[in-house]
Length: 453
Image (cartoon, rainbow, N blue to C red; front, side, top):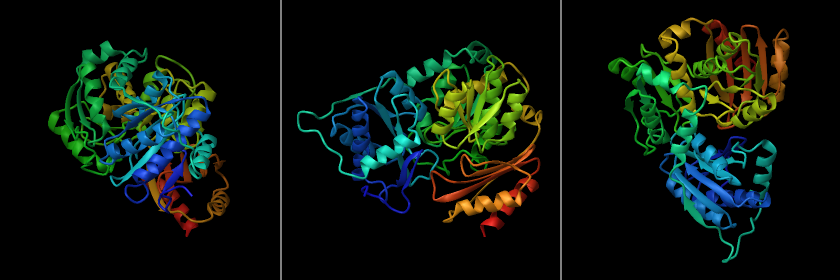
């Protein structure tokens, strides 16, 4: 049995998440890191990039993970507190055998997690993640005194990330700088403070920020959804900003607030990024099954097709690679650009949004109203024992819908959809629906709840 296992420990394609002091202890983290190091060594690698977000348990768990990796003979490249996409790029830069990122992303403050990155800079696929947990379930062989791993630090990871981003052909840096945008920024006291202000400075923006400290003491629920962005909206109005931008604690998701102070929803981040890329480079778009139709509309405006993949960055990344996609991501504000790397990247998303605004002087609010409007409803329910029976019942109830069982069940019609799936990060079932009106979307969720009862 893996040390520290409990009913709230979440093991999925998104990594291993749990509550600090209950599920995640230094002993547990060291054991998981040792198992990952053994996996890397089995694959012929030796170096492992280690990074974290700003959570208060991060330094302690970094020490534990470093010890676990060194105990199996791995060389540890410690990048410190940096964004998750920066760490993924660091794995590629160092030609490392993999990476461990200590972050619970958008989970509440009492959580932390280990995210495992392969040598290709992508999060582990399901088969490799299963191999890792099989190793962790047993006794991991350790190196002797003369085979222990070494360690070194990397303090240039953020600089490399930003330099690569700003050199992309789809980001017109001179055009953005010429506009002199005013940006209101909320980093929720996570790792965003290590990269986002520097990015905007290099893009010639004037930044007014809140929660830029990197102490992990989140002043609000850390997920950057509209109901959590009231203070950023107030900052936009007070500072006269052109746009408000909020990131999650590990900086792989970006949410937008328009110039009136209204949070417009995370799906628009991806829609605008898709539009910015497709103006210069045509090709397929891949998104997850829970992504809004606003992305389909943005792609259709440029003659591009949209394919859908199971939820989870690793799933979308591999689907993008298989499809030869030029851009894609997840509707939670996670933008992915293969020309940079196949990972969700909030700094990239911010640059693409500013690039779009730089060449079209319509304010953000007008860009939102220019497209067909949808209402999206996201709800949760306790996870039941037999989801397969729920899916079958829903398919029977909505026999006219197109069905997709790649990830839970997605039922879709031309202008609306319902997605029911078990969460990979919380012990719940997610119920997500979108339709032209909030009433219609809520009706789909209510029908799902009734079937659950």
